[in-house]
Image (cartoon, rainbow, N blue to C red; front, side, top):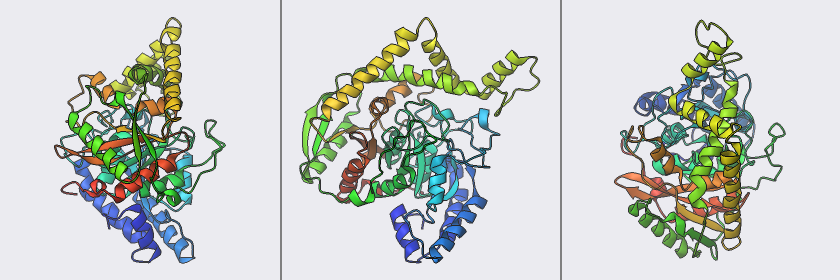
Length: 483
């Protein structure tokens, strides 16, 4: 049963080929057996999962139906789950049990999804490799000596290893799309505001967005359907109708205009990945798409702008973790200042501390105009580039990452080298656009992803293109050896 996709599970449950309880027990046993190799889970929620599975079976017996009713998933460990540890991959929240469910968790539970557990992640979602977690690095199932990408690497590794069919992730600068590319999955970063951030512990509030990770575009459509929608609890949630994503999967690509930015194919891109991207373009042309070269002239400024804005917002958001109200508290503080300093110094890991320091510096009185304000102006220029491009084309296509997955520890001594792995993904977050990564081939046995970007609220278009591509290729069906 572990090889079934989310769509196949929905059909199997509807046809009574198996029950949700049987499926849940089988997957929990598989996680217990195989996850020690991967370290993709922080917490397993066996009791909750079995309770939800039995309830889903009862609902089906009473005539209810739904693609997510009884389907097993997991949540990235920054979505608050009532009464269950929500750690954000940090010592700071190792003992924190959320008093409420995040909107995403509540919506999926209401749809009947079964929560198997909480997945490992870079600490407070800060990282591109899933190596900064307090609970240890996550391993890539395609090669256990390599990273799975981050910060949603636990969700990605678990789905890629067939421990479960789909999982939630979050994307602040590529943290759904990049691990999807490095583990041979499909991952979607929705339009900013499409999925509620209420109960999703914040890294950078103007950039964070929740989304699905699964093996196919069809599965992502099912999970996104359950996650998306307006939430009055989230002031950044947009009151925009959610279309039926599954209904648009089979639309023709005839006449679809695809733009390929010339800036994507610079010296920093592995030429073998460039070849696979060109092959994917040819495949889409066979399906009727029309391809043209476009330009995103301000893309070169994206990484500097992002690594001012994101740490600035992080320094503000993480100021609440002070050892006073909840989370980690140092032992025997001599006074309030000592409590603050030692609780934060001991509770946060090096990458989080690094970004807090950078952010605090960028927001300080003498440097706000020189750094933060200027970065926000660059952000607007990047958005304007996309708006101009989408006057000419329907979607933008390119690589998701410049390189395949690197070895564990290879970039630990050079954080900037890890930051550069986000060069193709962060622009979508700066502009608030929807993006998708889908499997496009392999380099040295490691997966490669192709990224699609679309205008605001056009997630359905991305899923349609990815689904049609996957009907005509088999990259997404490949399974890592041993799993």
